Image 1 (cartoon, helix red, strand yellow):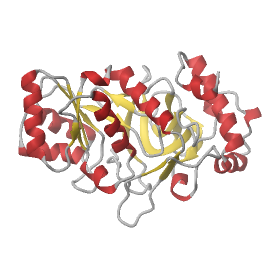
Image 2 (cartoon, one colour; image 1 turned 180 degrees about the horizontal axis):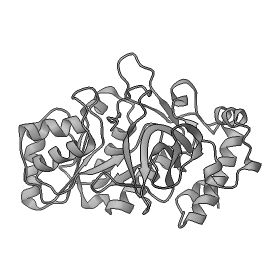
Image 3 (cartoon, one colour; image 1 turned 90 degrees about the vertical axis):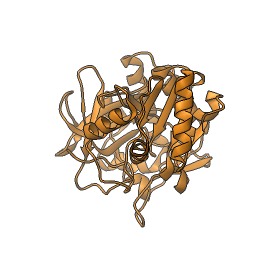
Image 4 (cartoon, one colour; image 1 turned 30 degrees about the horizontal axis):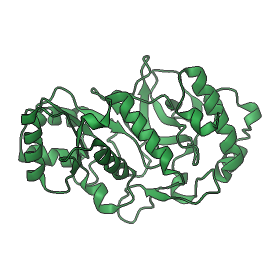
Length: 326
């Protein structure tokens, strides 16, 4: 089986480990930036026998280097949202089919068939800047849903309110996916009692509002939309996979993605489950880039495998998707 095919056929921890070690070997050989990083740490595939031993590339490298494991040219380059004048991350994607397979399979594994939903996307800041992987995903979900009312809402909150109320009245299953500040704008203009809608926030105030602690944000959104839980999507420009939370800020990953936490004082030490630390992500869909990334987020893994994001490292630059450090 080709390494690419095996990524989306992972059934167990044993499968994950085998594929992850294979991807590590492949990227060590084919990704010059990652190879140099591993060489500096004196880490070679012959020394690596567990996923905890794999070196995780600091996410900042996506701002200054071209992180690719392929000779193919990029079909698209996704960029992160940054503050004005800041250096943005660039993720050069040479195989969009892998990205589609990842986000389609990922969504389906948590929420079922996209055709069962009308998808309403409230992502103004992403739409306005271009180069957003989230907009690419939402656009595909809108098309895949095949529902006439599915679509993007830029600043027309009145039209969005009317569509939501119409779908609710018909009892149609709806997914409202939005950036935090825009969802708050919507509930400040209108209040709802939604029974058939999943409200999913993708994080970030994008400099439009004061940052809020997650629990505070979710309390406001629950009240305004009249729902019991707020769902969340956790993804980033440098990844091709997403984790989802169906409430309480606890995220789950698809089978080809895994979260580890590193010691905040010693970046090369992976911590036991239950200790908070820096979030390291294995995203095997990132086969043509780097699948092993050390992020600037702080998190904690629960005994059941779910994880929560606690904030960000103080010294990290403020990126568009920053969370307030608790």
